[in-house]
Length: 401
Ligand SMILES: [Cu+2]
Image (cartoon, rainbow, N blue to C red; front, side, top):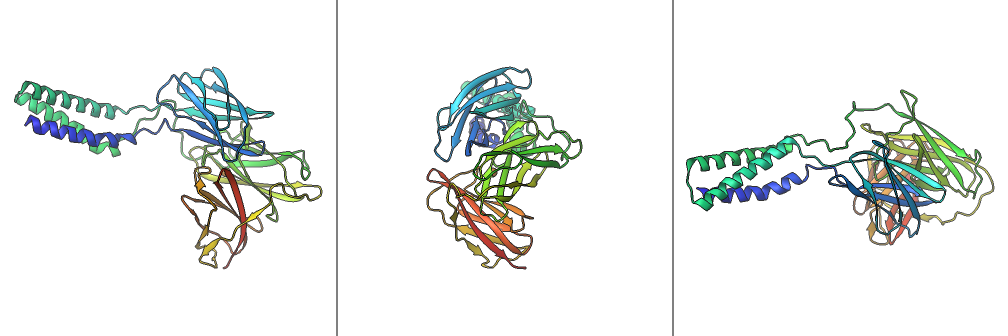
């Protein structure tokens, strides 16, 4: 009897390990992409499993660059600070984090800086997982004790059976039991927040072709009018900003820096005068995604684009897309795809009049499925990373009614 129990115990133990692995979600890396000096860099803040711990911060880029960043980590709980520096593609900086909870990481290169709010979360076991571990431990001790003493005492066998039953029952119920909130998590608020109201401005007020200017987006809460400072990182950035010239000849997909609460700013340089359309994709905590659009004017003579425009000839299925039904867009990449913003490819589509903007993702090959709302001409850009560079290729699509 004890041998059978011992075998059953080992079998259950072997099953129990993978079943628990997904309970803990804190401890994962946070990846935040930002546009610095017209380059896309991704800060990686490694997850921690306990505190105090060194918080490891590294920075990656698809395009080769040797940007160096000064880092300052500040705890919003007690105001303690630590500093360091990190270079693109090199080993991480280790900044001490004394406890879980809200922090700000300020990253600076030259005269550009961004302050990234985030939380250090530490996994916590739910009480029932401790009960399950305890029951497994008791079963194991009783079984081992029984084997060693060759005892067939009813009490021993009964006790081992009972604790094994509790452990197995908890293990089977595990998917339905609540996971513990990680230490340092934000209190759960009511679901849903008002829309953010966005206002775009440029500095200087009338940017000139070929000259650097700053595009700023100020976000205010549609209810209170206060700055919106609760953006969640989605697709590896708090905000994805698409800027296109009205005719679609100029396209930028950038990740503005948080220069103050509710204020996002990015430096741009465009070759062509005229009206530009801006669309920011954001997500407030406990809310859905939102597109914040606006426009600005650029003056001056047309200049050649710094990086020549690449075009693509995609395969569409159906070949003549229809408004309101899905179309699949496929492209061949010239090399092995590297992940960019967590995906192998991004497709951004704008209606010619600027009224609609769509953003689709490809998980493996460059294959996207999307539905366009109205007939007409659409301007499209595919973005992916390959061979150590970020590629943007454009094409147009006609959508029938
Ligand atoms: Cu983006």
